[in-house]
Image 1 (cartoon, rainbow, N blue to C red):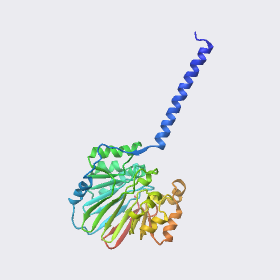
Image 2: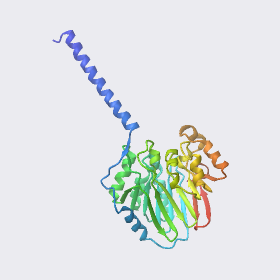
Image 3: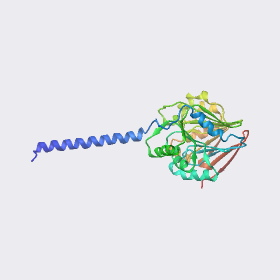
Image 4: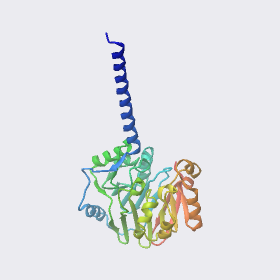
Length: 318
């Protein structure tokens, strides 16, 4: 039989083993929660002639376009933007995971046949959540991604769907595409490896003759101020990060000076407490006489242009 001293040694070793295992599990859990993002190295990234291949996709539909409509979908405190440019369809982000079926239904009601370009601005779940549903429902020909990956299951669902789809897959960089006479779509590279994932958002701009839209993802003040020379005055601004206090700094707003702004957000009185939504951001747009439209108030927002004027319609999400 073990002596009392031997039993104590065995018990102590067992306790130490259990405590060590618990500590390692806790560290792994903390790492998963607080460090889920990294620069991805997907084997199916396309490099080199990728920009030209995307342009060839657009060239297949290169024809005069009389009107472009930009749909800002009501996906609560998330982002989903659909650009309808004749036979060319571009989707920027896909809301949260539960928004996927609604986005698919919305696009089908517009008689969308396929999506020429999908953009995942960054790997947060309120931006890539529904993209796997969209990829399953439509042919997606090309995807532009921020190049930052995540260990979260919803992001992995999106990546698996992209790989299964076999779509052309690119990391964002300075790119400019010709969609038709007088219409360009531009990717504005604002830098990589920011400590704040939001600053790594894919930023893009649509220009139709004299009218321009700037889509900012969740870009924050750090990227805004570092890239002021890449921005110019626009007509319509998608307010970054759902109107959070992290974004829309004064120098950036001075630079882009929009006539109209669209904020994709949840109820501001609620989000102001739980998501850092700064109601002062709304007041700042009012002070600047920038017309602000919010999805929490108006539902889906559709802004259309013929290249010289803007028209708007709104309707609640069913």
